[in-house]
Image (cartoon, rainbow, N blue to C red; front, side, top):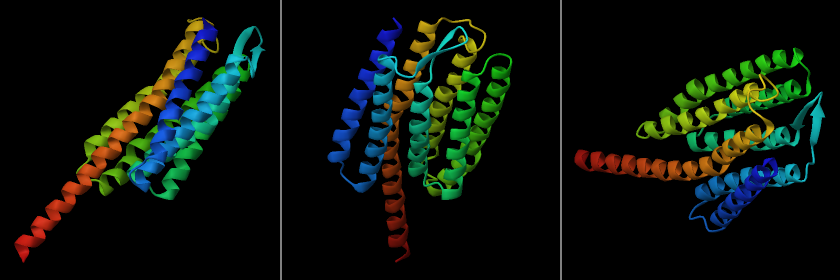
Length: 237
């Protein structure tokens, strides 16, 4: 069943990449093309690395527990693009984007070190990784949200939804880690793979569709703001 979930992930990511790729080619504006293109590369990277995992490339044993180290390679390349996608939608400043990407990569790298370490050292690295993730969550909930709301005062609900979905999905990853053989060993390797695959599909393909819907709502909010300004200007004249 583990192989089933890996192939399911590969096929799902490939389907997402194809959809977003065609969308980028037929985008109605440069703005839409950027969002489609980012989603394409997020899914394409995941598809390639799920294919590698399906062939057991990057598979090893840490002590007596199985581990797919390729999974961390997927996250290292794809999750920063998700941060860039969020930042593009929210028109986030470069220093904040750089800080969020840095915190994200630090989270994944220390999570990787936790995975390849034996207990109890792995638990220490897990705590370090969770600490970095909390820093990323802080940046998203405060700095990112404030800048996004300043640029789109009429579309605050769009960013509430984006952040809620994003943080719920990403917070589930360390929960799976601690429940799997890397932590308490409360779930078997097949359940672990199934959980990670479902989360990856939601975080990449599903979140990609949410990003497209959010861009549509942001453009509607901008149009409404322009119309309000025009009406105000007309009354003054």
